[in-house]
View 1 (cartoon, rainbow over the protein chains, first blue to last red):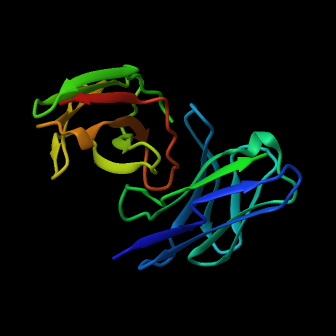
View 2 (view 1 turned 120 degrees about the vertical axis):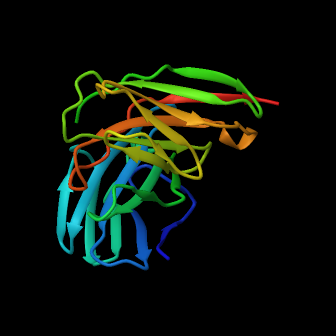
View 3 (view 1 turned 135 degrees about the vertical axis):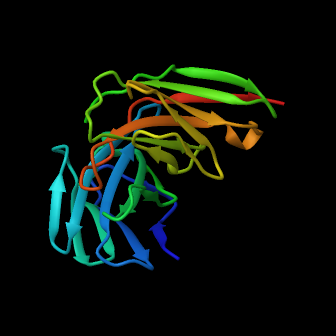
Length: 112
Length: 110
């Protein structure tokens, strides 16, 4: 069965520090991968998606970047965090054979 | 993606059926109707999806109007664990991304 792993679960980082969040998928190949963010009291915002290794599409210009170094690995990064980067970050995968997304358990990031 | 309209919140009592409405008057012929739910402090969870015909699965039923301009997610017997934000989303194929709106917050009372 397919599983998605996301870590860490919670993270507190100072302003100006770097960020690296990792997401890995098991039990499937060639997944579409997605990073979403949910700010406090707000809706889910799609940040990046990837249809293959090295292929990244950015939905919203911001202080973040994404990379896909391997088929089932998706990384969200920042060189210098801002207070406004705080939020709940969710990784998800999907494929073209079915219409459902499977979300990870999320990382709650607090920038202080 | 075409837009959907949902009530901000709904309330239900435990073990009663719940009908969550969604309006999508600008739906196109290739748009699938998706429902996800998000429990507190968790990622969204896929519930059900359909195109034209009504759909049933172990979690819920999806009733789609004949003109496809509205749909209803039906939880046959609400439990406290069903308290969540429910999102109705239109997606034109497996190639497009999911755009989440504000959804409906379902409150379930014992």
